[in-house]
Each structure stands twice: as structure tokens, then as C-alpha cells.
Image (tube, rainbow, N blue to C red; front, side, top):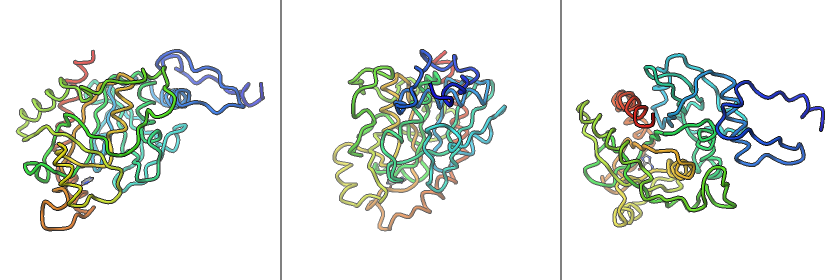
Length: 307
Ligand code: HPA
């Protein structure tokens, strides 16, 4: 054993990381994904005494929710072993562990995307870390283009299903049984009960909400009008460049999923005007308070459901 390996102490609370302790990694072998996720989870647990069962991925503009957590510990992604760094505008790149009311939660202020050059496994890695932390439910949020004509700018839509057109899958390669079985069922990838809770809370708050199918493309360009015509034809109501790898990884690990899109713009070719990223950010900003209010209302309901 090298002196470096010998002097490495087991981090505090490491035993509370999900599952069996990470196998001792020989210096000569690079840790596999399960071990890397375990190390990241141990690091996070060494920074806070909270043990969240609910995690949130806060897309464009929504990071502000995590700034409202009480008893918060903020950890820059750069500090977390093996964690990918976000480069997109409007994505802070911090993991915040804190409480919403009495409920411990983990909130990602920003995510990484395929279009930043990350591999699909890197994109899904935070979900693997959540799995190792024992998280049972994830709320994934995003900005999306509205394909369905009723999905006007500013509309919040609970994702009912998705179409993966990113051309890649985080489960490609040898299956990691310690995360989950080879061929995960995706019939109810987006938890029906969670969705009903979201729609119910939305209604109670007077927010007109809908349900819809999200199509994920790799990006980074916005779609062509012909592509949007095709997506409508195959049953998509929303289009975006994120979320799907995370959903696949979450379902593989048995984590229940709620996905909510903010329709930041009409998809390409629907209106007679070009798409601009500023428009996406402006709409996300405009709807932010409503979206955050909705998430705060949903969290206690999800906590009850997974208790
Ligand atoms: N297309 C893809 N991704 C998006 C869009 C869009 O129109 N709006 C926000 N994210």
C-alpha cells in the first residue's frame, strides 16, 4: 500500500452513504462510476449533517430557490470529487444542502449539458451521487420550447413522458448492477403520483399547469422549423436539451422522478420570429417566483409520499 493510500482517512459519516462501504480502491486502478459517486457522496456527507431524501436539479434561473434553503451548506461543484462543472449562463454550479421548512433537500444550482462537451455519463453523474446518498425522489426542472400551441410562453408543464433524441444513453456500456438492472422499465418514468401532486398544487395556487411529452435533443442550436414539425408529428409537446439522461439514470437506480418544464418560448417556426437565448432567460426570470412557489408547495407532498 502506498503511503498516500495509507494516510487517507475514512471521511466522517461515510457509513451513512447508501449501500455497502466503497471497496478499497487500489492506487493502480481508476475508480469506477459507482466508486466515484460514492466518494462524491461521502464528501458531501462530510460537509453537512443533513441526509436529504429529495434532490432538485434547478435549471435556468431557478437556482434562487436553493438560496432560500435554511441551515444551508453550499458546495461548489469544483470541490466535489469527480463532479462535472457547469459552464452555461444562468447556472451557478453549486450544490446546496439545506431545508425547505423541516424537510432536508439537496438542490443543484445548475446542471451540465451534452452541448457543453460533457459525456452523457458525466451529465448523469450527479444523479448517481444522489443514488449513493440515498435520495429517493428527484425534481428535475428545465426551460423548454413549446411545441403544443397551448403551451405559451411562461406556462409550467409537468412532464408526463419523454422522447430521447439525444443519440446517447447514460446506461451504455457494461451494466453497473450496484446501481440497477440492465433493462430498466420506462413505462412510468415520470411518477404519476408526483405529477398529480404538482398539478394539484398548481391548481390550488391558481397556476394554469399542463402535462406534456418532452423531446430531448443534443443541441446547442435551437431546432429548425422542420425539426419542430417532425417532433410534433411524433408526439412531442415540449423540446429541450437536458433532463432525459438524468431521468434515465434516476430510474435505473429506482429514484422516483418529477419533471417540470417552464415554456420559455414558442418552438422554432411557430411564431414568425427567430429564437433568442435572451428570450429564454427573460421568461425563466419572469416565471421564477411562481415556479419556486410551486416547488416549495410540492416538496412537503413528495416528502410524505416517500416517507
Ligand atoms: N429548444 C430547445 N431547447 C430549449 C428551447 C427550445 O426552443 N427553449 C428552451 N430550451
